[in-house]
Image (cartoon, rainbow, N blue to C red):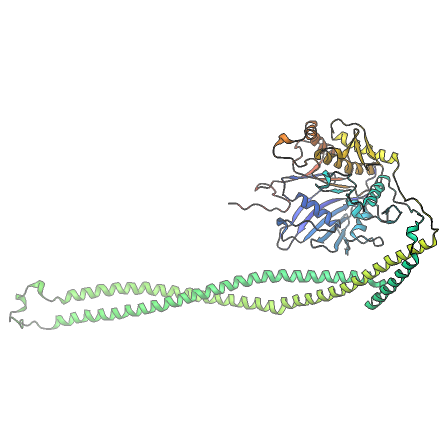
Length: 623
């Protein structure tokens, strides 16, 4: 059995400046990402689809704030080369880096996210090439008009979100009446391996009315478009080359701008830290200066008190030297007075000495404090000077180095963007010219054909081919223990499966989800068993758990049947044991059985503080 068509996903990574990478890793075969609702499972599927070239980016969710790039890594089955796609969540083109099996870079370029029938260097062209489907044609209407196959057509049959998987319509159809023909043709292409052949339809009378007038109008529009293209001064031959060169220069300017912006952010953070240190040092120095002034004044008071006490002590000693004389009042000698009523200089001297010792100790403590303050002030001066120098250096770096680089990259980016806009305008004119010339050719062909009517062009796959596809689906459902399984056939009228004699869409949500998964997986199984081209990849969102009310009593009878039959266990175990060849990625709320046989890769989102919270690792705030 051939294993050379297609590819498988190795990893999905979301990146953002100053954000931790959010990564999911996969292996070939069965991969199950399970966990509670609102943990990012559906968002991850949308990121995969966007990296594959979807026009609309994933719907924004709060947890994705700050992320700006989705990176998808795939492995080509035939060459074993690794392809890394980087696409900004804002949209735009895609950066492709190709590595060989030894992980050495083989090629690096920017490719368009939009499909081109003539340019294989688009995301669609690269993926279609890996799936061996590039250049295939599909019919777009019943008149036989064809267009080239786009990978967006194939993605519809490989990636199924939770809304489509329970929808009341055939899995290969979107419900759009305009796209019904092309969607059916893409499905037929995969089932049969044959693209839509050229159909020659004879124009109707209505189509040929006014052809000459239309051709004249088209001719005038072509002349106008050619004049506008000439006014741009751009050569059609050099347009794509210059566009690619402009895109490379623009990406380089964007990278330079982003790199400088991150440096500025980092250096401004350092500037803020040093500015705060300088401000705190200056504030503390001011406090210390005030304390020094007050403590110096206090020391002066202590010194004055010491001098005054020394004078008092000296006065007492001098009084002792004066000779004793009789009392001038009563004439009595001093020794006849009461002792406690006598003046005692020695007591005054002792008090003065005691107070002097006390003040001396206080001055010693005060001197120690002043010394410590002086040391702290000196340290703060050095600290403030260092912080001031750092602030000045950082400001000089910002002004002389980084800001000029920002301005230069912005000027370059604006110039490249302006030139790119001119080139895109010219490319739009060229595309318009190509479309006008195509219409001119169609009108010329109409004018040259006979004016007779013919029936519309139709194409249907053979019964045998559809029976083989239905048999693959039946094999899948049997392996999944689908209850009461009878024959599975494909109804051309309904363009859907009839299972055990009952149309697939007549069942409830749970059965519709399971049988839609069987349809998509069965298509992969059919292509692999017949060695037909296919991406070899299937991604399913909620194939087993459709919405259920909290009260299990309201669960439908069909869902109860599926539960009792052990469909969930059989679903996972059969895929883990290699029921189909290729990669199957399942996003589901409930975890797979822990003891199932086979090989699988599992990722669980816990939505709590233990284990991995979700795809983007956001955790609730702890109280």
